[in-house]
Image (cartoon, rainbow, N blue to C red; front, side):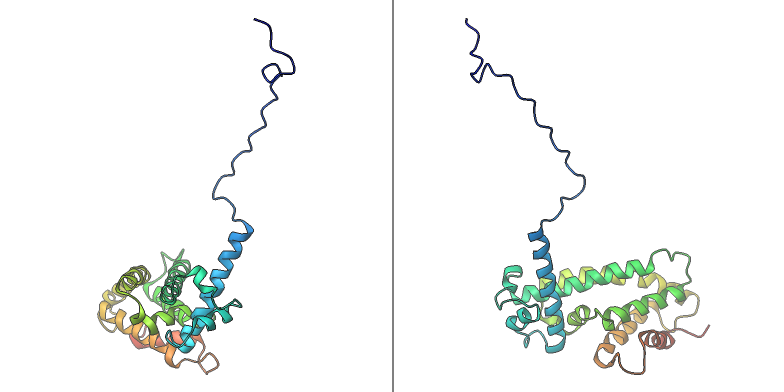
Length: 224
């Protein structure tokens, strides 16, 4: 059998294989389009939270929400299949933020007294309701009945995670004689009182959030 022709594919020397680039560890970086999509979605959530809180879910139109986000009127429906889905996303975002920021506020405080831990919990709750980014959770308080049963169940699961750190603190205070009522009832009263503050508290008023939290603690804790 004759040797292959040198200029035929079989006779050409194989070129060295190109080096395979090492695959970066961790999650792949988002493309510019993906980052822009995430930014647009967040703008819609922020605008919807403001409008749902100020005007109510029924009164806030998707046109208003798109305008608040600087987008065309139909843009929200590229990210959320319905206005109700957007409402749910606002509530979910608010509660997930609350869970994360509360965990951060409590991190590294294992040796802190129950009284000090309750002060941190109350002050943090005031912030998520009444602070600069406080549009999301109040929407949940106002518009709970606008959710479907399945949506309420999903939000309730996140709320349970948020409220879980409160009960051990309240129980410890009750056992020490520092809590004025039994822990389960105290939790309901504390959340009820703090949540109602969204109806009357004004940042420009005479009470800072620190002062508001201190007054709330005085209602439920016996003096030291």
